Structure formats: structure tokens, C-alpha cells
Amino acid sequence: MAAITASMVKELRTSTGAGMMDCKKALTEADGDMAKAVDILREKGLSQAAKKAGRIAAEGAVVSYVSEDGKVGVIVEVNCETDFVGHNESFQALAKSIAKQIAEAAPADVEALLASEMEGKTVKDLVTEAIAKIGENISVRRFERFESAEGQVYSYIHGGGKIGVLVDMKGGDAELGKDVAMQVAAAIPSYLDRSQVPAAELEHEKEVLSEQARNEGKPEKIIEKMVIGRINKYYKEVCLLDQEFIKDGDLTIAKLLKSKGAEVARFARFQLGEGIEKKQENFAEEIQKQING
Image (cartoon, rainbow, N blue to C red; front, top):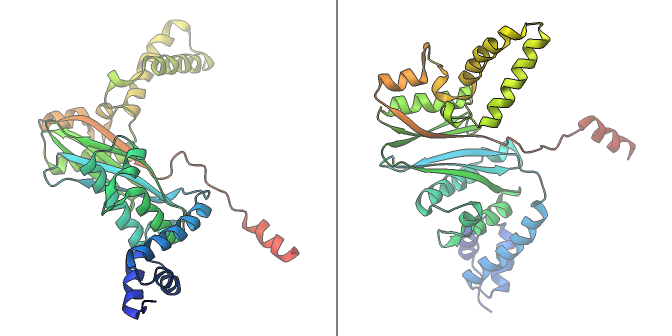
């Protein structure tokens, strides 16, 4: 039986994040073999992670990574269960390393990302180890990766990871790139320009606006003109290039870009937890149960 020293326990604890006694037991079971002890702890971590996998993970962070040459940019949403863990240094470091991995490995989707190798392990294994260490369910929900053909990729993170934006822009400069990314974060456009609005969506909007005008008692002969005016207003809400610049209402984004000799090729916007149904806690009911219990 190999002697288990304090330095061995410390080394294993540092590398895995597991508890001191768990590390000592794993080393004893592995007869001092560090790699085997790591596997033993990972197996136990898998068991712990499985129990946490069903928990709703709607907090976390949207993080970004842009390559030094500005040609490749990534935003990724990594979820956990609580806002507290979302600001945890270990969680943030994991999310940022995943963003860099996406930029470098260019996985096709989340499944391919989780199967890719990072730091000698798969991303899935690293996430599982983080679950065991941090004690909450953690999941990589989605990502967007831009590789600019002719321009640069710019990113903007708002609210410590509540909103993340990527912009692929040709021409202009870093200040303009940030301004456009902030515009996307604040004004929430759905499309770059009018040509991207689906015909079915536009037709539906026209029908709704026509009915609104009829309900207002407007005569049919002027409804069509009214709808055209309101559709232009609709474009200003959903199309980036039609929007008023948040820093100068006299400029549209299209005019701003033209004045700087720039063009936006595409953009992406993630808002943390959007679309995830969060568990609603009824604390009054919970306290009453404890009193009655």
C-alpha cells in the first residue's frame, strides 16, 4: 500500500476541486495512483452531476471571445442555477474558456462542442467536473460564431453577461463597432434590413394593422395609406438599418454606417435565459409547510 501524503491530497484537491477527505479516500482506493484517483473522483462526480441535471438552469452568463486579429468572434450562453454562481470566478473562467474553444475548434453545434477536446479532456467532461465542484447544474445552451470574410468582428457584453452581441462589420473602426453592438443590445432588432423580413410575417403585420385601422373607424379608402405608414414604423422597430441611432436620434443606423464608410454583414444577440421557463418559488407556502410540518 502506497503512502498517501498531504502534498498528494493537496495536488488532487487542486486539480479536481473535490473535498479533502474525498481526495484522500480516492488516493487510498487508487493506491496512490494520481490519474486513477482523478478517474475515481470523476466517477463520483458523474453520479453527483446526474442528480443535478434535472434542475432548471436559467441563470449564468453570456460571454464573448474575439481573436487578436478580429476575424473570429464568439458569443456563448452557459447556464447555471443561481445568479450567485453565474458570477463565480470558476464558472466565469469555464465559460470564457469554452468561448475560446468555439473560436478555435469551430464546432458545428453544441453536441460537437461538448465532444471536442480542450485541455486534454472533452468539454463535456470539464462541464461535468465543474458541476461536481460548484454544486449546481451547468449547461452550454447555445453559441454563435462569426468568421468575417472582409471585415472585423466586434462584441459587446452588457450587465455582466445578461446580454451578449456580435457584429460582423466591414469598414469603420472599433468605436463604431462597439456603437453598433450597443445598438443591437438596446434596441433588439430582429433583422438587418427590410429584405430579411419574411413575407408571411410582413403580410400578417399588414392584416393586423388594417384591422386596427378599421376598429378605429377609418374609411377603407385611407386604410391602405395608413398601413403603409405604420409598416414603415414597424421596419424601424425590427430592422437594424432602419432604427434611429441610440446616441443621435437624427441619424438612422444606415446613415451612420454610410457616413463612416462601413457596412454590417450580420449580427447576433443573446439574452441570458430567454425562453427558459424558470421555476417560481412560493416562499410563503414553503414556510407554512415547515410550520405545519
